[in-house]
Image 1: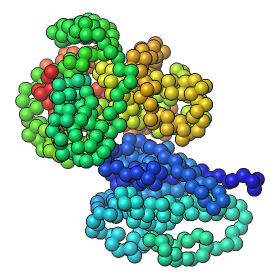
Image 2 (image 1 turned 180 degrees about the horizontal axis):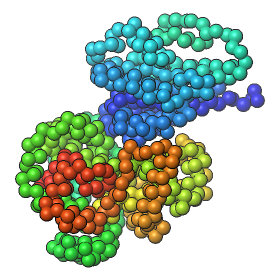
Image 3 (image 1 turned 180 degrees about the vertical axis):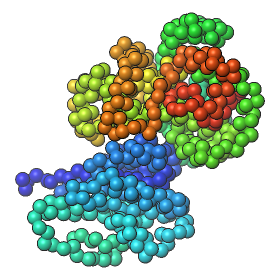
Image 4 (image 1 turned 60 degrees about the horizontal axis):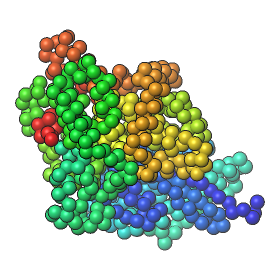
Length: 211
Length: 382
């Protein structure tokens, strides 16, 4: 067994309101490209990213879900078996931030891990290369917001300028692996308590640090 | 009419005005260049490599036949509808397509029976709720069409394309049960594809949302889209089911094809990006004709009632009643005559009437759609 490289396949959701840049983030992350042409996603799109993770292989199946609210009743099918999620908003449009909690509630109400926990979810404040005039200027407030709403962390990102996208993805994967271990360990009584760690190099702040 | 192929405008528009339409390389650089359907670029610029080539004499003959039908439209629909259907399946001549679609969808009559209505709607600011929905719809359709930037920047309700795009979306309104109906039909038509999709837990909504919502305008090469829409306008929503089934049959219908796509992701990739060279216009239409024998209108209706029953048993009452859908031109025609018999002011039923439920080619439509139809009546001639 040691000879084989261990493989993980994780389904990751990318959700958020219309036009916040979900598809662009995925394109940047997977294909290293960016286009100014906008074409709304209908239903759901897919992309695959393969990562070398220590001595293991991690395959991320990214589900790019259309931002239209009217698809609300279909999201259950899209969410099925996901292990992690990005909820994206556009820093130049406050209404897209207001929708974040709606997306989070929708997600949590329709999907939980086998231990009853909600899946690891990272908040992305996208288009940070453009002028922004609210909230994300105040990172303490954002930290607070994440804590209150059950996000494992948040990042300012830009698909156009390729800012923080890899970092956010790595961060999410780390949390997914940790929650997977949690589930495995839950069979045996847990004796290890999570350490608190503040990694200054990360541009985001988070509190459930995992080593 | 912009929806027709080979308009002079789009051909002569070639490189004419170094337009200010962005500088993205995806749309062919600074020179404005369109294909013969008026697309500037993007994924819509996918010419079907197997576009049917019709001899001039045949094309001319077909035009004459269609012009003859135009002159006695009601008679053709009431007495010789099977022939109309056959002609739609052969493909409406591109020069007459606009007019034909207006007649098939009954929009012509809408205009004539409601004088002044269009002007009235044109002056209307529009309900913000609809404006919002239209805004969302805009980018789903044809952002790379030559007429898109011009109407999008003007951003007014009088923009014909804006309305037409919305119409296209609205027509494709999806019944929440369509996925179940579709999957059940697939089981009969192509068990191999059915088993494959089931094995990898690929729910119909993962691939058919786009197909049904845009009636394949984002899926097929444009020449095929026109052929599908010719049939759709004439025969109604069952065409959408049939085309979808044919596509699954073609993509997942043999052991060889399935060998390459063992997995949920691989299968979805194939269905979301059907290679244009895999679709031959004539073969597609022919397959749709063949599948008609097994997927009849009655079968779709029966499947629909089975799924409604199942839904009620497992999930309670439906929030959207699927109701009876109008199956194309003939059904619209009959309904129209019934309505006219019931009330002398029957034609007004077609405007702003609140007759639930929504469904393809339904009788009641939101106001802005009526405007769409009326606009096309007024300006959209050949």
